[in-house]
Amino acid sequence: MDVNRSTWARLRLELRVIGIAPPVTALAATLGGAILVIVMHATGAGAEHVNLAAGAALAGFAPLGTAVAASSIVGRDSGAELVMTTTVYRRVLFLRVGLVVLPAALVTLLDAVVFRALNAWPAGQGTGGYVLVWAPPMLWLVALAMLIAIGLRSPGAASGLIAGIWLAQDLMRSAILDNTVLRTQFLFMGVADRVPVHEWTVNRIALPTVGVVAVIAAGLLLGRPERFLGSDAA
Image 1: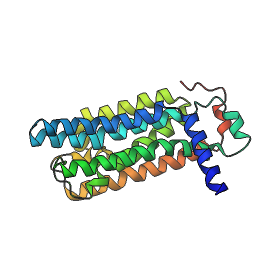
Image 2 (image 1 turned 90 degrees about the horizontal axis):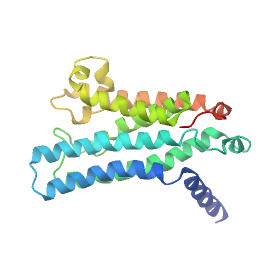
Image 3 (image 1 turned 90 degrees about the vertical axis):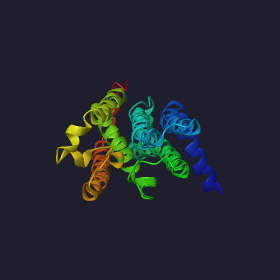
């Protein structure tokens, strides 16, 4: 019982340190996308447009909002030097990111279930789309956002770069899909039209693989948390 109380007290403390902005940023993206799809469905929008909106909400809005929220947590704790004297900063930071990413992931999964029930579903996706449409790009974006924020010691710069990468992939999708290497890292493969099954499978494996490598790299950089002291966390 004491252990449970201690755990909940720790989680409440970390949530207070995180503040309200990161969770709101992450959840606003995925909930906003869900509201858009539901309103379009309720007002009789065409099936093609509703399906397109559902794909954008799952594969686009939710991963981007979550990544921006995750990057905003890195290096912005003005009391970081106190944390370093009592525990491993890497664990603290990953815990804080997890407290933002996990709720966003669960809400995105709920979105997928609701969209499927409404028959608002990306073309060509089966039941695996409940997770595979949004989870690989979310892991990829969150991991790279953390790595960039840690490497540059600037959450603001990381958010801008991640948003730029996301937008570039959306605007240049034809060029990316025509490139053998780049299409393995295409975020929107889960909602792209007429993609061969083997290329879709490679993409869905390659994205989380790169994400895991980025998480490991971020963890290694966090092995020296003193580098954040006095850094610009803007």
